[in-house]
Image (cartoon, rainbow over all chains, first blue to last red; front, side, top):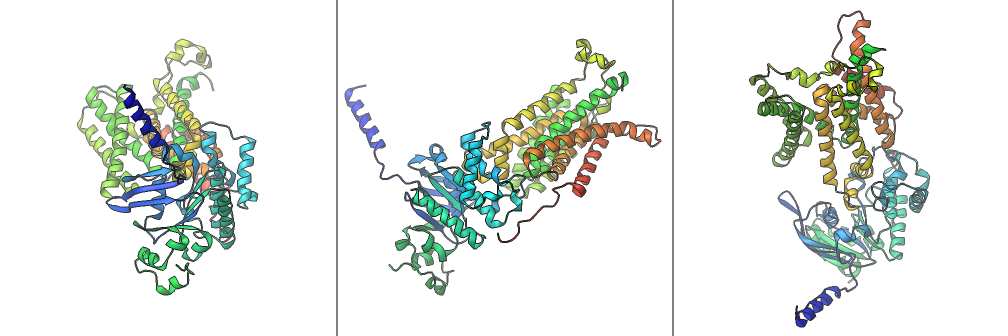
Length: 271
Length: 308
């Protein structure tokens, strides 16, 4: 190999190593997912800023949950790329914690609250690693953060919906991740749980972690989140709440299904 | 219990017990995943597999039979997936269609082929031949220490023991990912557990149990053991670890009690002949499930109370 080619190669190497403009915790490029013949998510580009609290907003069936699942590799994508902290998913999976929809599992499953939280330590424990006292204590501390420590020994079916959601959040906390992806964490929970969850999420943000929620309640968006991603099959808008969460974008997202009167009540940021 | 017991009953009891354990272990996960019918499907399609293997090789020796049965199980699993996806039919119906038609095809095939010279018929497929697995060289408990006599043990015993051991090891080794992916497949995928591989692996494991047990104990026991002991065990406890142990205990109890009742029950009632051990073992497992439904401590499925 001549000196000239060597130099060229190293130049290229430098170029690849360098472009790190504050790497985004989650970036998807031209992501398309389909169930059967019908696309569920079509060519979506989105970049979640580091340290943000981002809400994914859109009508039912708009592909919000699918977008999360595709980003996590749980559902196969037809095309597009997913970068987690600038890396392919496989190399950065350990930095993500995922909270699925509460209704996606059978809460009759024979297991106790603490065992569910310990599932969050799977990557650490591996196939046969023993659950030691320090692991149990950490799981308990996570339950403490969501106000569920006293329920550690309960069978999970004996919890209320809100308590179940908090157990799921505790399991995600046990993963000690940098990026938290939550699928409708506030769906069907009581007011006390909603407060407990948002407090924890805000604490995560204060620790410089990034939080992304699929979110349904338009009324709380401005109060809970600082970034939004509006999708309805395609991306409609993304950006800070102040500039992207506008009446115009909401009309586009919900396709006129949202009454003007409803939008007026949302206390939208004035642009 | 003396020499007669060792000769006549020891090996059938052991084989029945091992078969029950081998099926009950994967059954726990199948039942929790609401895939209990898969076990049913696999044990039915074993028949056409065995018949085809016989038609090709002309013998009923062990390996061709096992390969034929395993092949049929794979064909059935693929067919079920195909019917589900292409026909957009719900899984239960897809399984039902697949295993009944394959089993029926097996019956036709069997009827049309000349199996008069060998021990292969529909009854054998259903009840197995547990009672005939006699240890001729077992002349008493001392035979257990006699290498020559041990070499004469029915080969089904070793096959069933190997299958039960393999399945137990797999369950222990993959306990954690198996539990997580059974409870919450989405989360499991997000922590890097290959969930598709595990769900396919579970079905293959169930197929191994069904195929190994089929020849010795027949499909009635296989079907019953996939479902009854795990379902009864679920009602005994709210922890998966204990549920699996309970299911093994119920499987052993069904096998032993069923075998003894089949052999001696009719005599106690004044009858003359014994009844099918396979039928009795399956019946006992059903009775255990019924009792668990009535009296077990965790039979009340507590729904989530509203609010917190």
